Figure 1: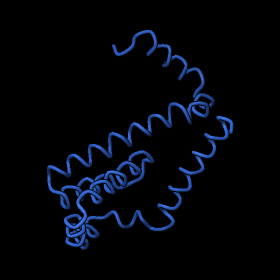
Figure 2: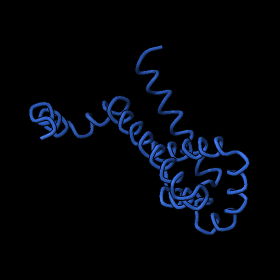
Figure 3: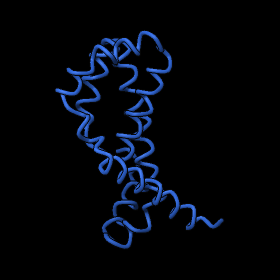
Figure 4: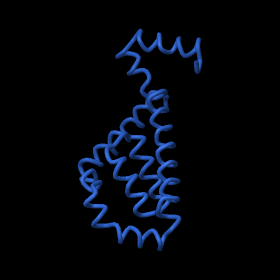
Length: 136
């Protein structure tokens, strides 16, 4: 399988997930009202399945961040309401950081060609500036 075919399949999978997110109405579940209505059940599930609940939430936050889906604020509030401040901070940071890393990698390696075609010289000048001056 060629690199361009792998990129196309990855993009297709991402678009499929984003389409499913909206088509299945998952975006409507990310509200304060929904959190209020389901909080006790979520806390009970967390207490019964501690590790699975934490891992599931990290994966959910990871997907939300990596795909730039709406709902980060509600997910962050939910983490505190369900897991408490300590565990909530940990799962949000793990999910957000790893999701942001994947989003950056997708932009850098998978979508780079499309972005270069669209912005052309501006991206080349920016890349040269980073190469010449680094972090300064």
